[in-house]
Length: 359
Image (cartoon, helix red, strand yellow):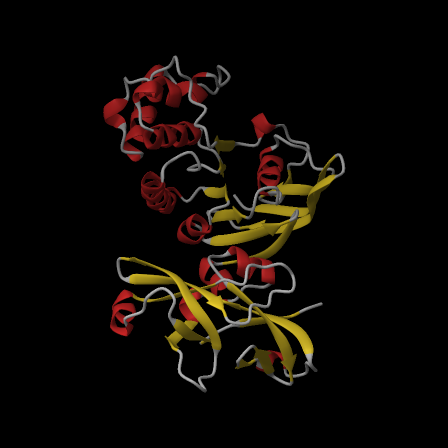
């Protein structure tokens, strides 16, 4: 089922949760709504579900306006962060619940329910715990049961609100891979809300970056990572360093270094800033006359093959209150070869940067 979101806005008192959001979701797609707390992603999910009513705009399912269709009629399945399993019911009965409460004319027979529930439990690889109760399961198992229950009623759309938010990092990673494999098998149009960049980039077909009630960018994980559309997107997707300087005729002048910025060849001595990811910084020992940003190594964290460096610039300059600390990454092998230690004077040069002119 395809979903069209047209000019959807929502306010809670003076707070603008959503501001004229437009989005097209193709049938069978797995979409991530990604953004910080309060950006409007959960509100949008609830409006798609019919749990919340938009102040203006419309939601179309496969071309049909569902704006006034009750949540029970939308054929939507939900998975929430906190499982919402019935504690007094076994795993089997939890998954069977949606089938048992169907109107008499639509309700499957007991034999059909048993077959369907066991098939779903096999799908989520938990058929061996059908007789247990939720209190006897791990967090990851409970979340898989919640997903099986949502799928039991054969929803046209599956909505997941921070589905792995309550789980520890290792279990989250396992369930992310598992959800992706499950989706590739079922092809149910699915939308999941997350504030975890890694989760969105790893699982989704496309990522919808949201900020302050608006859609900032929509694209594949590779597109939004390689070509961020705005400073917000660049800053939100992973660690990033922010450098201030001046753009003039295709060059960005920072302290001790000039970067080629052909996209801003028309700029005339304009205020600008450059975003540079830690792995895009070249780090060398300082020698007199070296070009680059001179900084002192304050701390090095070497874990596995990567060394993460925290550097304090010799001339810190962050006019808008950003922390001037520079984060760089290099191979642990190179770090050891250079023999670096805390307090060493280094020079840093961006290999690659994304430059924005300051409005």
